Amino acid sequence: MEEQLIEGCIRNDIRSQRQLYEKYAALMMSVCLRYVGDKEIAQDLLQEGFVKLFAKIHTYSGSGSFVGWMRKVFSNTALEYLRRNDVFKYSTDINAAFYVENNEESPIDRLSAEELMKCISELPHGFRTVFNMFAIEGYSHAEIAEQLGIQEGTSRSQYARARTLLQYKILKLNKNI
Image 1 (cartoon, rainbow, N blue to C red):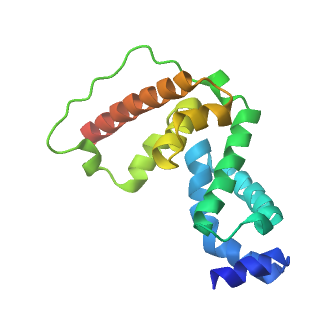
Image 2 (tube, rainbow, N blue to C red):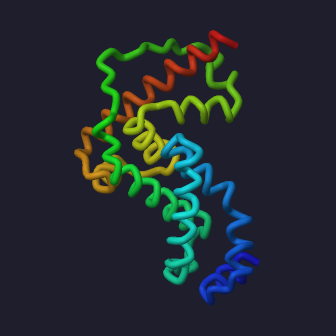
């Protein structure tokens, strides 16, 4: 079924494009939302990503996961947006690290997926971008540095600070539960 949709999209068949959109829009929206944290901007990126996807779908080789290939198109679309808006220029600098105790029951276990995603979406842009790329998308720090035009050490630092701030946010949220 997926192969037929892909072939239809390569032929610019509007019905196939609509079916592919309906099948994957929610999943790709979550990718966009993880990077930008703003629903309206994420919706714009979703549309832009599908335009790019339909324009480039003929380059999908068929090897590997189609969904993985799609994620790359959408994460690159979001990263292009963040680069255009100079996301690291507006990054919040956190000088003081927050200490998180290692309890037997993890505070994250008490959160719903929606609460966790909300915490991630509230991270400063630079932190959120690197966190998404490293922890969720699986990029290496070298790849992140190359994609974002930053130093590898900056990527590592942004990720470490994102984790620290995320841990703090999770603990704070758990105390309010």
